[in-house]
Amino acid sequence: MRYSPLADRITGSGRGTWNVHAEAVRRRNAGEDIIFLTVGDPDQDPPEAVIEATVAALRAHRTGYSATIGYPAVREAIAARVARRTGQVCAADNVAVVPGAQGGLYCALQCLAGPGDEVYEDLAFARPHVSAWSLPGMADCTIVVSSLSKSHAIPAFRFGWVVGPRALSSHLSNLVLCMTYGSPAFIQDGALVALQRELPEVVALHEEYRARASLLTALLREAPGCRAVPPEGGRRHVRAARHPRHRARGRRLCRPVARARTGRGIAM
Image (cartoon, rainbow, N blue to C red; front, side, top):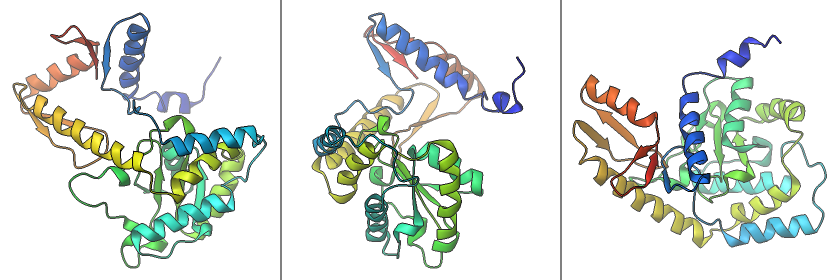
């Protein structure tokens, strides 16, 4: 069977990360104790109010097709959140609900290049997050992509959004119609609670992420030949090697599932 050039393009060098993760999952399922430092999959519980709203929507049989780029109430809640946090006008017509931030980036890039990813706006540690949307005169030339996956520990919801000029929402509607035919209604109902409320679990998640980042930075600073760059937010950590020999060592370390002195496996 012949495959399109796209099949080769999406393979890329980044596929190695998923190979490490897959091997770690296999070993964990086989009974090994593994610490995952691979993909950003939260291991904390999501806000209970979000789960309850999602379950209630399922029991109400909210399982049919939904509005292609989101129900009006959900888009209005996202617009109100953006306006509240940026101080700039944002309407429901500026918003399109998409399958997660990654799906939002893909959709935006299919329509135009150069979106800005604000998926970690709730996970800024060093200073308050400043959205490009909040800057004077930027609303007509800014695309904001965000989600609740990490901030609310619900990556399986695949709930995200794109905020941009109203004309973009029209193009996104046509694109999403051909791709996913809209986000599930029960997912939108659950996400609506997260968008409308300031939930205490989100604050707790933020502080836990901050503490974990500080702990990992302190541990990496003890490693020979490398410099740990403290993250200013999000769920990623940068390890800067000072010598090519150390960079090669880092690549070898990330290839297998390493074995720590404690006997626990560490997947990076």
